[in-house]
Image (cartoon, rainbow, N blue to C red; front, top):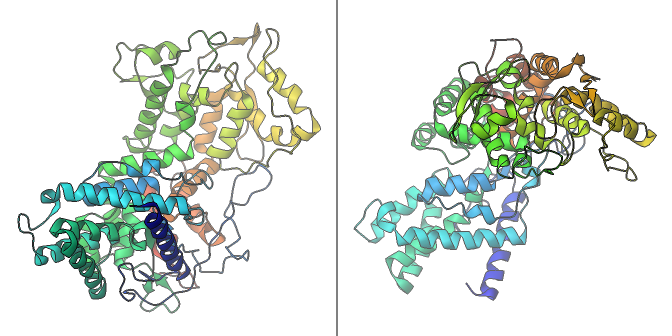
Length: 580
């Protein structure tokens, strides 16, 4: 594609997607394939909360009260997000399942802006000219690669005629756009095919129509037009086709499979029970693990484990080969905590089963031989759950010493979903350098005594002190600078309060309503592509309550529970809150 033609195509694609975004709730408006709109007329834009959750200073986040307009969300609303662009993760998975090409073309796309840690916030998923050009180039490449192996994807091979093309485009178009094509859309595709075929033959015709599908707004975006809820004036819900996409992208990060498409074609996804049944089926599929792992990566900033670096003179046991091993352990631990037989908050924050090899065993003082990872029980007198894994501890520390500030901020923000005020513009963010005669606690307390720092540090440092028996690469220790380690601490503005050491802290975290609500918020945001609104408060309370106490609810069950909330099942619901 020449530069002039490419620039023109970028402008056309950008304009098309912006026009589609302007017509909130209209499927294919302007029509994806060049015909008249095939979906319902324009609906009203749902309330969108673009701010973070509200809380007192450093407190645990509650549901935010502001909608996109800045006004409180109306009673009975669910702050619907009518359009959401596919993330890079979703694009790659969709291309894989649609075309059978596991190429990860989206790895080179413009990265998403994270909102409250997640990459799928609808408001942040904007379209730039650079990304539009990347979409065009990707469509060209993918279509060419598909046609190069056309016999594998063509349903009527080896026949290569117009009837075969029509069948292929109808079926592929429906799978790509996650809904049936209108007659005018199929006609528009066939017109492209016919013209391209005349210029270069059957394969060229298929290639050009595939390009057209892969840059269609309804491929690149998930668009909820919705439908009225019978017997509930003013209430709308996703259509069965739209619900199929809600389920598939939340639980699998990709397009609906054949079972979901079949249910959608029969309009069999209009009840909460039907949605729950599909969710339970999908949670048994390995794709659910992969998609959850992607969410957990974002929530817990696990890239920091990958990028960890330390000064070997400060930590003689440090090796540059450790970060990928540490990351592998964290991933395996989380997988077991969410999907294992216990799979509850205790497993996540106090569990002692982990998966290590001989290199990590040296850091834990555990028994493991060989390079292969193996399940082990960590010393329960020294380790307690996710927050005491060497990867998490090392990633939240300096390169030459521990950092109670970083570790405390991780717990306050990521584990308890508490808001932290930004530091003053003039604040000195440099950690006091370690010395042979001072402990990290002493140095941090000296730094936090600065009045411009004390407010924020009071919220996070006392939490981080609880991890001071672990050095900067996560090894256990009893002394620092020749002094016994003081690992007492406190989580202020929280139900957790005072604690002595990481074991008591993690036990209190596992039992705290704040931690249960936080993990519920993260999965809820991942499902809906937005920050929660005031109208979501009851749903989040119920999700968090399902995790409260040992054995009451599982983290796996929480995923299914999210699909039963009004925010997931409705676009707008009855003002009285009742379900039809």
